[in-house]
Length: 341
Image 1 (cartoon, rainbow, N blue to C red):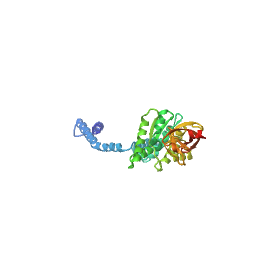
Image 2 (cartoon, rainbow, N blue to C red):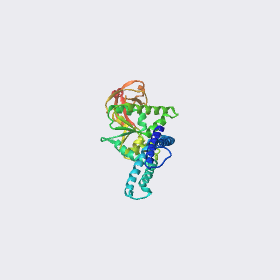
Image 3 (spheres, helix red, strand yellow):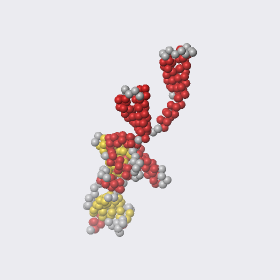
Image 4 (cartoon, helix red, strand yellow):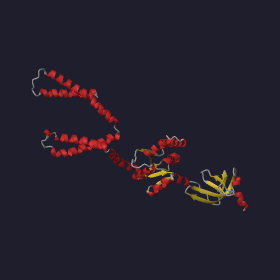
């Protein structure tokens, strides 16, 4: 910076000496000395003001990129307005003809200042234009992941199957919540948070689906669920979750939801009354004489009269199937009891 400004100062000094020679002024020294003195003074002035430019450069480096971009947008707008205003003032003889330059300087500085101060509004304006495209790309809606579904981990296996199309969006406030959980003093919460971060990192590295971290926040809203709903409305995207309450809130606001638990229930094998199964009874049920067993997918089977078979693998016959909000429940009786009847 010092070398460049010294060279520029020397060049300006040489041009000033050339201008003074054309004025036919009698100097007490020769023209060569005049050139040397002017170039030296110009270089010294450039060297003297270099710390000022260095400070300005360091201040620019400390600014956030959003401040710089919004300031530049305000600067360009200010210059454009100054050009429009200066056109009718070109023939006005005020300030020795420098009025357009003064107006341009004032509006440029004013535009920069307004752009920096209104950076949030400027960034929000451009984000809306960008996120509108992000939310619906090539006719496929984007999907927003909430904290619970990331920690759950099944989303990683689902993406491998190729059933999920479009971009998976992870808002910055969801990422902040994951990090907050991972830094918790509670061991269980800390493990869940770290698991969520590992799952997210795993999904990002997989080629099956595109994952984008969206730097979008709503400072006027404190709850993460409310932020998810508002973001989904802005993008026209869907929310992927396994949170029952968030599912209901999204439905009330008209936001489409993809619930992992509903998907898991939908792909469970269909069991009809009268079918025979081989199950391992592991514990007693709530009612007297009942035993409880589970299928490989976690579906609970209540075996009527199966308490005496705890710890054994027996054949049962399905009597009825009950579908609840929590999942599917199968009721059965031991085949030996059916034969006795």
